[in-house]
Length: 182
Image (cartoon, rainbow, N blue to C red):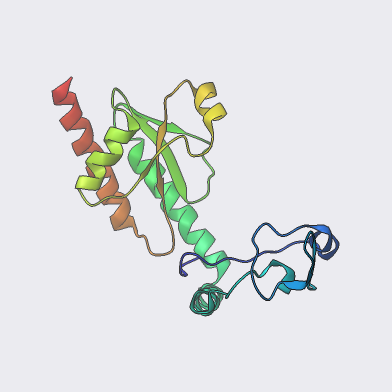
């Protein structure tokens, strides 16, 4: 969300949160403590153990204001435009497998033939291009696709078509480098 790390929001149905037990404990959340049990304050204090991350909360608020100013629809449109452009450019690379539907959110998941995704990610990183490689918390999908892992390029409001062009150029260099190795 363009905000600081280490801060978040808990959102839930009030009746469920009221019946839920806290998992973290600290001051300001307790109502009464006995030797063997405790009672909790009302929401939201029940889930606020210890000193809140005040600077993080202020930063998160500023990030939310920023995103609202830009507009979530505009961000979504920009991400989809970049993903479509990336898909079109990446499909021109021989020996690339792209996973997923034509219509997509702001990302493209792929593998270069005969190159492990972690090697692709490392090679791209050496060129200043950040992608993610691994299971992406979807090991059953990796088994279904019959791959060890995949690489994923994600796009956001701060990316441009120039970034996509650099990714494609980096993929070609990576393919060329590893083609020489094999």
